[in-house]
Amino acid sequence: MKRYVHASFILIVLSSLLFALPVYADMSPSHRVKISFSNLPESEVIVTLLSERSSTGAFSAYDVNREFTKSTPPIGHEKAWAYFYSYQDTDGYYFIQFSRSVTEGKAFEWNHYPPFRFKILVYLPDSGVSLVSDSIQERYSFSSIFRVDLSRAEHGKFPVAKGSALPLEVLAFLLRLILTITVEIGVAILLGFNKKSKNIIVVVNIVTQIMLNIYAIASFPLTYPLIYGIGILGVLSYGYMELAIIVLESIAYAILLEENGNRAKPITYGVIANLSSWLIGIFLAGVLPIVF
Image 1: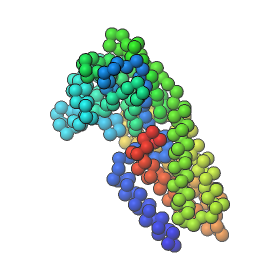
Image 2: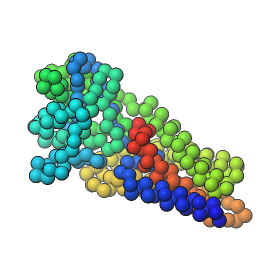
Image 3: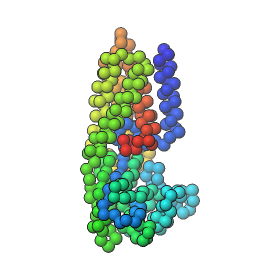
Image 4: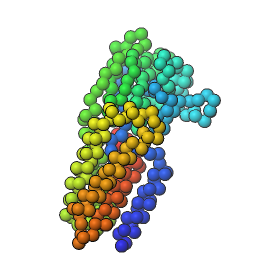
């Protein structure tokens, strides 16, 4: 009985984190854009993405009629942001107040719900020169990688090439899997499951995590453009996947971890373990964005 009380207490503590932290992701793949640059000038280079929509994730465009919508630029980006605010895009794309400095060895990265359709805008503060991508780009996977060679820029515009996200996706998946198993084995220990049960839990997690990630990645080109413009549905769209995993794992545990006809314990474990890994995933998303 004490184990159930302890587990419930931990779940309550973890749940409080859900309301104290911005919701980014669980231990399924999240969204990111990475852009590698080559042939950069020696002077500072600041990059942003112009968004098709006026907001995405935690970022939004500045509304001159609502001063509170204006964000504070990173240190050293004040001149760049002043230019970005005044930039008039031919297609009406927005500067949504996010920028990064880049070098030859440091790529531009936007983790957690970057724009789905965007243009790449490059600004050189020392000269006041700007360059923009010659076409609209679109995220093609959870981790969308692009390459830009600024030596190919002509008339203020440069081409963009897509890169392969597979190595990054595989590495991130393995790290998420390890973290998920670590959390859920911890809950199993707390609830007093034996070594054999823990081995079953590991196998079940491997299977369900592979299912979750394959489904999420494979369905991205179809589902994400559909939910992209529907606000809160974009957040809830992955909730049903997590719910499906909870149901599947709880059923598996009820069958495989049954003890003397008692199926309540393994079902309870399935719910608590999955919610725990999900909430911890939300917390870690802010610490390890490359994984989530």
